Amino acid sequence: MSKAMKMELICNGELVNKHSDGGKWGWSNPLDMLPPVGSIIEYMTFNQNHKEGQGVLTKYVVKGFTFTTEEDFNRLYGNKVVKINVEKMIE
Image (tube, rainbow, N blue to C red; front, side):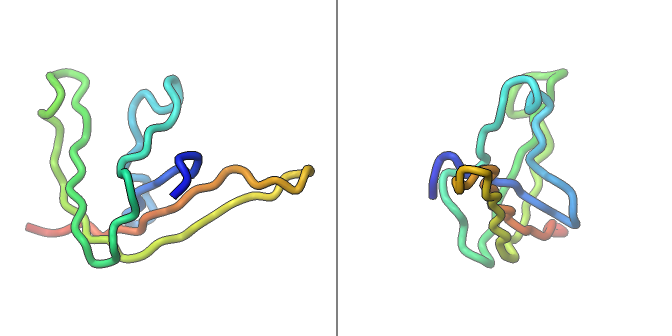
């Protein structure tokens, strides 16, 4: 997996891993590799009003992937994104 390819966690059409500083500081991938379909991801949000590690922990099941890319005028490819389609687990 290329480090240039962004990863998005998508649940019910909504972006899960939208960081509050994403527009200001750039993008950071939530995972180091693509998880297998059927695996469980635990994702904790960041709580800016308190210390790190005190956000909301949610579990998701990986359902599938969507890979996107765009060709530009130089026949190069950019805007590479892998959308990791997940479903929220009910506990």
